[in-house]
Image (cartoon, rainbow, N blue to C red; front, side, top):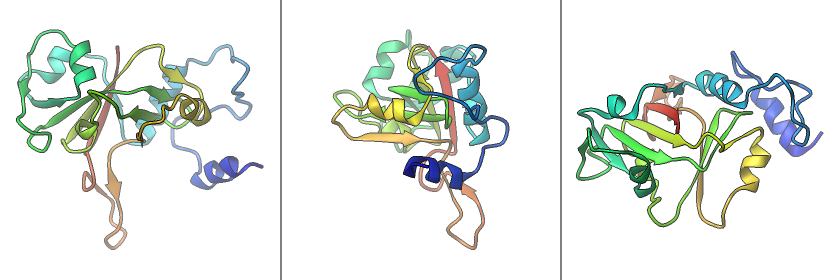
Length: 179
């Protein structure tokens, strides 16, 4: 058993959607839709897949966008916030979605400051349809030499008397939209 396998085994299986036990990183599996597995694992972590149109989702909301997210959206139905801290919704483009864990991988770079994924109450991550991978190893193999963030569901902590609180160290909600 590898160190990775031991860590994943210690986490237990998320409710509603684990990877098949014979999942291989090299052989494609017939009958498994990576986006369905991603969605099940994202929802098990408290996140949400969003299928409504972006204008409907953002209409009237104070939003903070990473530059790469603005390039994917047409027309401004949103209200631009003057800072990420004032925004209700932060919008980013994820480098990839990881089906195995329901996680998003975001790297920094020009126009990708990533404060939009941390400061607002809601993080809306846009992911290109072709950027879903099976495993964490496949996602990590795509990393650039830049700083990256791995996001698995909304922010949560149980630091104080073991009481679970969401949104203390980041967004209360993580929504993912395939573009």
